[in-house]
Image (tube, rainbow, N blue to C red; front, side, top):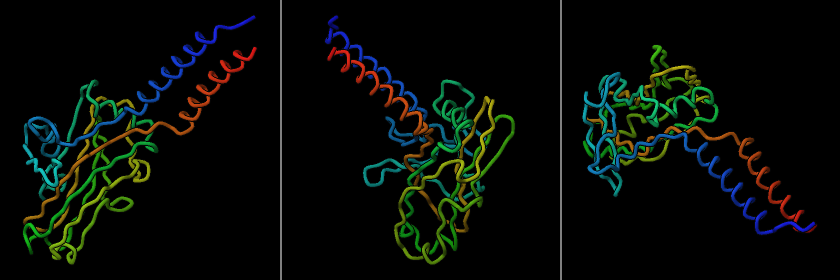
Length: 234
């Protein structure tokens, strides 16, 4: 019996595409704040334990990229929060609550100590915090090590400090409770400089699919294609 190669080939391609779509959907459990809207705004960031209306943080274009400017004051300097199930932050934190080991938090920072020489203080520390509707609270500060720390010599140098912080929730001992219906994510800044400014960009929380799951999907696609090839030879 001869098989219709064109039909089988199309089936394999459709199945592979479907699985590929599933992979993209799995990797899409992510929320990003890059402040590139029109007009640019702080994308829902507000004062600590509050909402966007409580503060309007400056968005400054530096090197062609919009960045949110934050200054010292109150330790938990800013956050975003949601109880809306359709909000990407809600969806991402919900997924993170069962997969802290594969939830990556990252952000870019830009600190130009030449903006106000002598007014950046003797120390600067940056971290993140997590708060849910049940009242659960966790912070990466000092935890297993601050995410970013500059000493007095660095802050008095007039130098520019820029880079990316990236870590998994599990690596910092952060455990998001399951079954929550409200989530909050924020930034911590601690220091003693009167004019300390940190510019944040590409603040991201992403739940990365399990490598084993991706491997199984890849094997499934390969198996289907292999089956088509074998049938073609019959």
